[in-house]
Image (tube, rainbow, N blue to C red; front, side, top):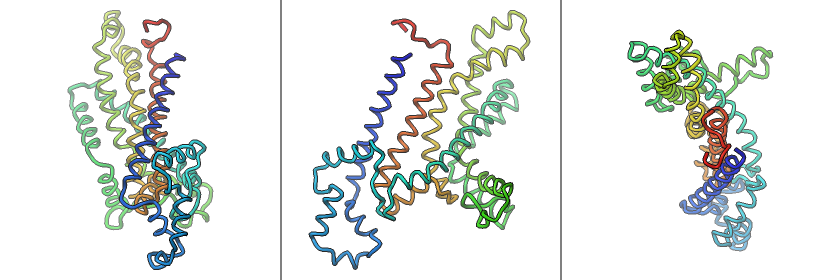
Length: 337
């Protein structure tokens, strides 16, 4: 077990190192240099003031951002900085990038964690119902429901929800942007909690819908596989009721594959956060990535890619560890294992 965890930790670091190489290389090959973006985004001027900058000032800026050094040297310097969480300064507002991420990351984590919880809370029971009533109308209905939701892009669902549940032309039940109302500070404690929850519903539905459909399908397949195992047939031969066989024997073992899915959900949530947070104007990490890409704010873009990679790899590592913990068939007691 200890050796396994050490191996997974080394793979985590090695993969993260690969992500930093790809991130740094892609942005170095992108059209336009970081220096040009810095000059264009400088609040003291635009193209007009830029024409008055001397060559000496440009050279000093090149030295400040290490653009006068070879690309490999620049990568090593950048890697040393991010190792101590120094992602540099934003080109847009000249604030430390780590400070901007610290403000946005908790919001994205709350939405992402809630989406995973909602997907598990609804997906597992739906998958069990589908497996329990296999090849019956309920099974077919749940299968159609889950496949349709899985095939629907999150931005399409978001637009539909905003149109039918947030516009004046239809129901207008939920707010369509942000995480709080304009009069939030004037509300009571209960009013603030309700206001946050009110803004929370539509984005959380968009976040969780893909994971919900995926977990439903996987839980259905897992429970059907377990129902055909020898230990289930043995339990039936002993005279145990179908309810006991299903929930005590098949259900518990069918949850083991679901643990591995948790790691697969996180990359999808990290990726979809860019679209969903931009669509609902949620001030999270996804919206920060979108704004940084539009502004070509290189330090912020690179930092967000690294943070996204860490979150994704952490989820995969956690699912690997949980799989070892919950599956009694996996053990490390001997060399052959």
